[in-house]
Length: 369
Image (cartoon, rainbow, N blue to C red):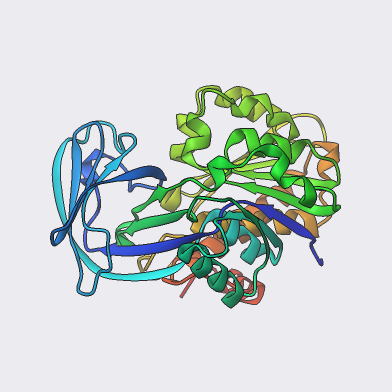
């Protein structure tokens, strides 16, 4: 199926810092998999401190050649309930790469991206544009004057499973809903809003012309008390998020009732889908994580690989979102294929997604070898 996908969401510069240990003690719960905004505190020194308002600090000894920042970064909220004190880890390596859920979904779906960037002379915007071109991602930029492009410090513990993106934001939060109107007039098979503020996502989904509408939220979407996700959930055909994000949402049962399909991923514990069957009955399917012969190298982009493979499989097999129902066998098939794609992307430390042929090979083998 030649899927016409239009993706609205951020493209960032990701400065990826890989560390040697879990970011929180395993006794305090599963690995971190959430995004949080940050602000730069004092600068300088050989270490980096990530300090949350609950009193938990992660101190990172920086690897050779680290270009910055160093010193202290204040996180906007606590990252793990019950965690206090300090935890010391060591940086193993770093790299600059393309990031942002908008860029990830556009790449995996071979779609067109609409994102916000700073003015043409902004150095970070120039880097993001070159990275998008390098990945052959078709894109259009909404230029935001007087602001630099958004960027992310992404701390990953690799095989230990933590993924902590710390965002330094401004561009996308400064947009008004009408900024997207020139790109909402073209019909498409799939319209995706990824990690955009709820007020922007609601406007994107209210526009006609999309056969299927998919929302890929970040943690801040679940925490938004001014523009509740439930207020526009009825316009969402597929909502895909991770367990920590889902459990943060206060009115999650109302949201689950309003969206056509809800998928909640849970890392090594697999995934759960909730939907309505053609008989009008509530359906629920749980699929384990796809088997692998070795620990993951990096958990970044696993959620995007899962969600894009899931929706592509549904649509290629004839799912009609307008009906609001879906067969359980089709959901299970899409979840297993999506699980295999997520397992494959765990071997990548750079931006990219497995080809459909690689997913087919893994499915025939029954594991990622």
